[in-house]
Image (tube, rainbow, N blue to C red; front, side, top):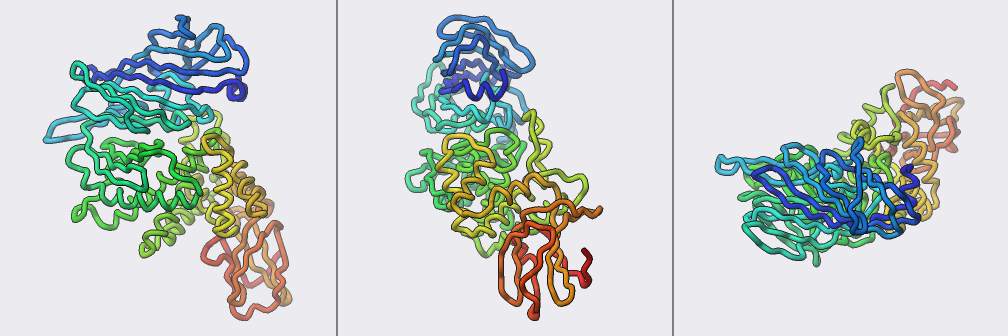
Length: 521
């Protein structure tokens, strides 16, 4: 069955996930119940399952045979239009950085552990059998059993808690409809620094003795939630938000919905101990992850080849949010140096690639997360924002969020949503930028007191064939103007430049500008 056919036929309505952890033996026993609706009857179902010991499978209360083959749990039988699938399994707890893993830290010179998760992009399948695909959104209800002295957190708040035989069991409230890679649960000797934004509970979650380092994070989280609610025109939809400091963490942070995980040194700030300059970096990382609560979580890409868009938007919007509340930091100057110039430095090489690269296997997504995906991608979005103006840009994003909330979308859906509000040729502009490799360069040419603009691709080997629909930001005789350059050469209306010419005012466009003396066509 093809991926497209599966998407048309299947609706994973709900997962009930029940995990019982044994820290001494470093393993867990699990049961997952899946409510699955079908639009037509099928006789085979293949779930993603990696490194799990599958014990038993039942479909609609009947035990049924299964096979394990190349990371798939294959279940054969007669599936109805509405099905309850129950799978008993076991998994291991090991010190790695993906799936369910053990994060080790020291307390009073003793080793202690946190049970934590990292599922993006495709490690949910190593934790429990599921259909580990961003387009198969579902509601999740999580039940965790673990040593009674520990505390558990997940995407939502606890619904019920009880203690039996020195073990604690916590059942969490249902999550919103979301993708498997956004699911989170953590178990440890946690403490909390709590606050409120409107009616939303915000908690900084740390190991013992570190919660005071969360004061700065708590403060900026309130500010950034307000910024993004206004920016996207949609309230943060959960009743709580945890920011969790993890001792062992592969990435800087991860946007699990309602339970964002961070490397400790990118979340916690201890006044008088942590360098004050690191506040800017921490604020930017927090803002980046918070923007994902809308752009990525509320609306999610259909497939991994648009993951660049999630990260590019989060990168750009994080800078905007930080600049709103901390203007003295002048972070947008850092954006030009750290993001735009970084992207161009990679993009002018012959070895560059388009922003959007076809992903056949989700494992390939890690290979293209470089300066092109993050830095060029975000810089192109900045160009679009500045070309359209803040009002049309924001209205387009609000249009997109309203249309696709709790669902999935492609990049083309976003361009259309922005184009509908701005009436500008957004689809053409963005299609050129994301599918054509390289950085444009625009020349100002003069001939017989007439001025021309010419665009090419800037490479070590001249390329006159690549043409973009290129938003230009000019300043001529002290007057700023914007227009779209969609030909190789155009003649400017002005014939007398007395007060100077700036080809890319404030470096607003993703292109280089050059003003030679002579003209060659």
